Amino acid sequence: MTKVFHRQLVSLLNHCDFLAGYSFKSSRFSLSPEDVPLVKGENLGHREIDWMKAVRWPASEAKDFEKFELNPGDVVLAMDRPIVQGRLKFSWIRNHEPRALLVQRVARLRGYNGLETDFLRYLVASPAFQAHIETITTGVNVPHISGKDILSYSFALPPLATQQRIANILSTYDRLIDNNNRRIALLEESIHLLYKEWFVHLRFPGYESVKVVNGIPEGWRVLTLDDIVLEIIDYRGKTPKKLGSDWSNSGIIALSALNVKKGKLINLEKCKLVDEDLYQKWMKSELKQGDILMTSEAPLGELYYLAEDNKFCLSQRLYSIRANPEVIKPVILFCALNSSQMQGEIHARKSGTTVFGIRQSQLRKVPIIVPSIEMQNQASEILNNLFIQKEKLQKTIYKLQEARDLLLPRLMNGSIAV
Image (cartoon, rainbow, N blue to C red):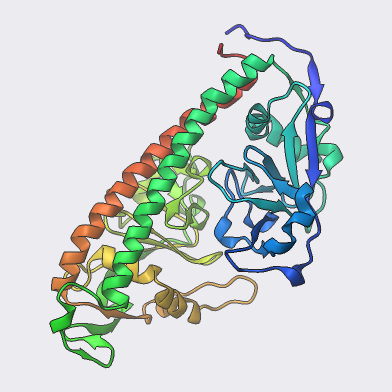
């Protein structure tokens, strides 16, 4: 297709207001929700900022650092370890996100002199910009980039009206993705609150008439994970070569620990793939609806619940835990494993020196309080519905991300008319 715009290359140096963050003293950091969150490399991910992990600066002193205050639309980019797991660590400040301050080794970028900041966001998101970052990254222990090298990036600058149209098209996808993520967060909160109310605080329907002995309602039991599972699927040592085959260019996704985070599957587009023949050799026990994926190490204890049937190959550092539904409903087991109490039990049994993990033999010893089957039936009916809604929203997000990422480079290089 004929390119729609042909422009002389310009440099970010002449079109970007660049600011590196301030070296805030860690001794003054706060965790109070009343104080101002800091954007650091540790809580900056790919297209997201983890506000839950953010340390804070005293609100009474924030005015002294107005220069480093972030505004809605500002683009932020990690200068240390700028690429993690093949993804650029950058994001932008959404309108609904909190007032924040910028910390050293994170850069703030704003467009000026004919460059729209919204367009700049997608310039930074483009594969071409990430390729530039890869070429300027130096260092071994802590890979890093410099402000000067960031600003050396050259690109074709379309007219303002074209920039605005491109940004509007792509931001429509991002708004839909953000809206769906917020809906997922509400569903997750509902799941968490129901489980906590019924099975931690023991305020389940009819609790007033149930006798509690030693902290456990009558009819409930304390068992081990070994007592309540049908199977723990563990194919962590398998590789295509050991099975006389190799990865494929298309086929079935091979999940590893890198793909399970905060109850979601991430980075699926970067997964290795297996063909049907290799899948049959590999997955002697196939995953089923209700299975629980758990990372065995690096990191330990991340979980994902298979609310619907999905065909995946189980790869490195990943268990699949299959509940015995006659003893415990799968969704109840997932919520239990995801609770702070059970996470503590899992981590108490970890081993290793540099990388901590848990052996299957130790995992099976983890104790768990098993509610009465009648109570589980009531809760699982509600919880399963919430998980199915969450799964459908997540699939919509995958499709939106795929469409946006396919469109983005074509819009940025002018091969699609706007």
